[in-house]
Image 1 (tube, protein in one colour):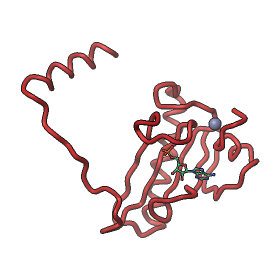
Image 2: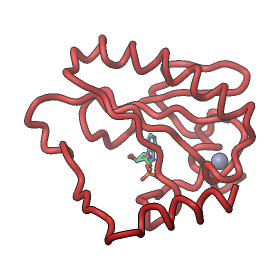
Image 3: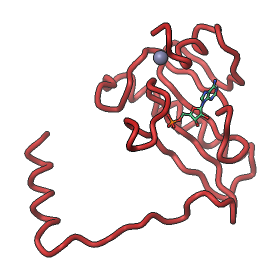
Length: 136
Ligand code: AMP
Ligand code: ZN
């Protein structure tokens, strides 16, 4: 995809602090990290979101992401690590080439520590579970 900045990184047309590469997957440091060591793992093939990503690409990314998560955790002396993937603008996706964030975490780093969970109204949880099951 010529206009995609991550495709350009894959082709070597844009610089990156690359930390891993194989035939399917590449990983490099995020240029604007939540914390130092914030790393992205991406498939070399251009897919926009988790919805389109073929299973074999997903598996390849997950295997690499698990290895790199350990290295990022150790290499940054982190106290925790978030594994995050955003799909579409309302969910915070800004680069339309699927990517998995590995974010090392430190006490009081001002990234989130909890999200605003709220209970369902009576009966809604079961109803929605059934609806989602109907969409497989
Ligand atoms: P998202 O908001 O989930 O789409 O995340 C996109 C991420 O890509 C952001 O964290 C950016 O800082 C990061 N990013 C954008 N351009 C580059 C680049 N050229 N090299 C490394 N990371 C980048
Ligand atoms: Zn791309």
